[in-house]
Image 1 (tube, rainbow, N blue to C red):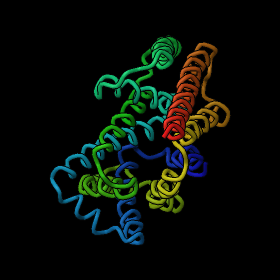
Image 2: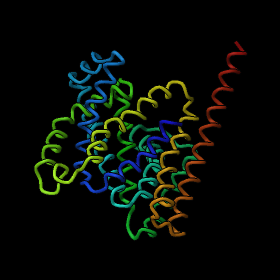
Image 3: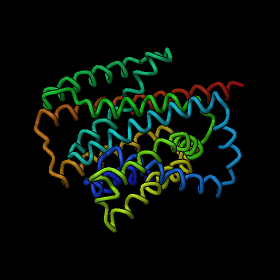
Image 4: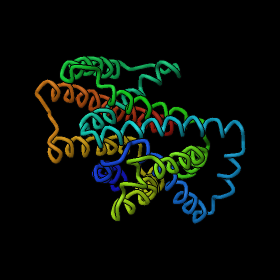
Length: 292
C-alpha cells in the first residue's frame, strides 16, 4: 500500500519542478537514481550479480531495451504532469494492465476468456469516447500505458529482482543522462541558470523518489498474493486522477468521465475473473490432493 501510494503521490513532487524541461528532469532522475540504486545494491550485498548481468551481452541487451522503454514512460509521464495533463497520466496507468493483456494475446499467444474479451471491447469503446472528449486520441495515456506494458514484457527476460534490474537499466543509460545534465548547465534557461535552493534539493532527490517505492515493492511482491497486488496497483492512477481533478482543477467533462467509467468496469471484470480463476485452480488442486 505504501509503495503504490508513494508512486501516485510523487506526481505532486514533479509538479514542484514544473519550471524545467522534461528531458532535463529525466536526465537528472537517471543520474541521481544511478547513485542511490548502487548504494542500495551494495547494502543488499548484490553488487556482483548486477555487475555480472550488465557485462553479459544477452542480459545487457534486455536491460538496455527496458531502460529505453522506461525513459519513454518517465518522459511522457513527467512531461504530462508539468503541462497540466495529470488526469491523462491516470488514464494511462489504468490502461496499462489491459494493454498488457493485449500483448499477452498478440505476442505471447495467450488466450482470452470471454470476460476478458468483454473487458478489451470496453477499453476499445472507452478510447473512442475519450478521443471524442479530448478532440484527439489520448496519446499520452496510450503511450504511458503501452510503454509500461512493453517494459514489463521485456523485464520477463531479465533474471534479476526489481531493484537490481532497474540499477542495470539506469547504469546503461548513465552516459546519456550525464550528457543531458551537462547540457542543462550550459544552455540558456536550463537547470544551471534557473534552479534555486529548493530546486536543487528536489532534483538531487529524484533518485530517492525513484528508489524508495521500488524498495518497498521489492519487499512486498514475494509476500503479497498477486490477486491482491494487482488491484492495489490501481492506487497509483486513482491518486493521480484525484490530484488532477480535485487539486489541480483539470477539466473532467461528463464524456471524459464516461470513458473512465468504461475503463474501470473493464478492470473490475478482469479482477473478478482473476479471483474466480484462482479459486477454481486452488479447488482443483485440493480435489486432486484429497483424491491421492
